[in-house]
Image (cartoon, rainbow, N blue to C red; front, side):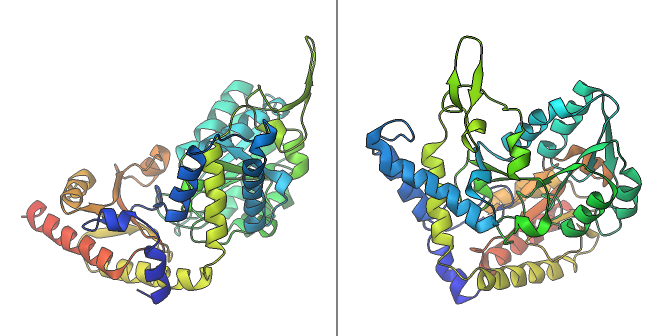
Amino acid sequence: MSQINQKFRQHFPFFRQSPDWAYLDSAATTLKPQVLIDATQHFYSSAGSVHRSQYDLSQTQQYEQARSLVAERFNAKREEVIWTSGTTHSLNLVAYGLENQIQAGDEIVISVAEHHANFIPWQQLAKRKQAKLIVLPLNVDYQIDQQALTQALSAKTKIVTFNLVSNVTGVRQPAEQIVSIIREHSSAQIVVDMAQAVCSEQVDVQKIRADFYAFSAHKMYGPNGVGILIGKFDRLQVLKPLFYGGKMLQNVTETALTLAELPYRLEAGTPNIAGIIGFGEVLQWLKEWDFEALNQSLYQLAENTRKRLKNYKNLQILGSQHSPTISFVIEGVHHADLSAFFTESKVAIRSGEHCAKPYLRYLNQAGTVRLSLSHYNTDADVEQFFTALDKALAILLD
């Protein structure tokens, strides 16, 4: 482990409070740094509010600064950043927001590799509007089959959505190429679920050129319960709000509603103020670190882990890309049995369908074991994983 990653690890209280555990489940939720905990405690120790009174001015400024920091990190405009409760909320906001633009017979294209959050909203939208849902297959590299994509696109195609990085396999889609194909063959609006990419990739939305992007703060050292939708201004401008209520209007009478300007028109009600301010503190803190250096150590650790796994008999890794997320199955061993042994050995991993039932059926798997690394993981964490794996297999394959 490099010196910079060791210093990074020291900012996470989990490792002091649970020194016996190896945390290898960051694809689900990254651990929380001290700066987030401090910001959250400070907010809840105050008479906290935003955009409500004069006395909350400083917190309102922190809240809006967090929005500016999201815009800066992802190369968007601040009015194109919408606060939600998570990736699922963000994607549903788009699916419901585009509903009036979908007619019977229109087509919505998704990939089979989607998380439920980027599968079900489009399936249900198609059902509500009597549109056709087209589910794209993958190629041998676990990426969207570009020939199938090209054939699926037409004047009827209104929405195309896909993940930037799979939460099951860790495989990154060639989003830049995919978007170019979509733009060439249709006028569809493009939605990207980038929840699994944001921790270990400096995503630039201008380079990908999609219309909407969704992710959750808890995927990049932020709080649970905070999501982000980034969209092109003109696309956001015509989205129908998902929620109606306070602070998203300019005026309301008994017979008419005038919506507020972006981003507030899509942010009805009291937001997760503590979480958003805390996420802003995390983003400011992350600017202090050499992201490339952190990633270099992370990807080397992931590659070493992948190489060791390949030495195990009857073990299949799903996906071949260099990725901090590694999913595998072992012939004759149930993933839940392995998971039980890992928990007993104080190794936090994930097993099961990973909220991606259609994808698991496509892969012909009942479930997988998934370990996912982040910038705070060490060689010792991985060694603890392999010790637990060897112990489990010695018993389960006896």
